[in-house]
Picture (cartoon, rainbow, N blue to C red):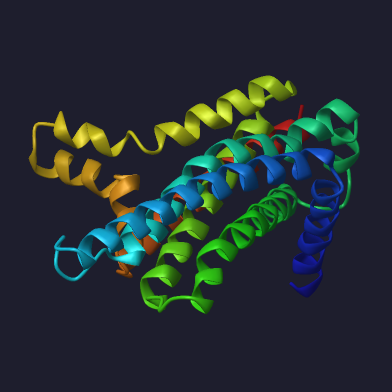
Length: 259
């Protein structure tokens, strides 16, 4: 068992090294930082404007820092990560195929499950590295203002789970094609569709079908975390999405081994 786990981490380390040494990772990081900086600055301006209005006869109590600034920042980070992860996850399998190293990987003494989990771990680690950069923005305000750490922590926990789902879906898309453009577009479409499945609850006839679609509402589960709520149902939901994506990818890799 230890050797099996060690093999998975060896594969993950190799892929992670390739991701961090890739110019693509730093280009994506730079673009993400530009967008996050701009939107965060505008949110701070909006917060300052509302705070000023509350001092001169505006709404009592003043604006809430978490919902005016942090919640908006988390939402923008999530939106940007859909594109960023779709581009990053393309390297997990598609680049292996283009470089001609996929046959070597498939004939190596590791199982399809180890290959899949290793690549998933590498992709999640790289994506979470981007999230760590985005977390610098709200944390930096602790020097100047009192922060509600609870809702901020749950918001980022939700982001970590959502982004891990994006990685799983992107990895699945990458395993299905050897074309980088097709891989990115497929991952992007599938990740966007995750947010629209729950909308089918409005068109469903009600009853059990409606309950199923409501449970599959990606946005509703994510909003719970932003509000500072930890729901077991939401944790299980995101874990299930990840597990399904990893399982389907493992089947694709296993089938490629027998071709």
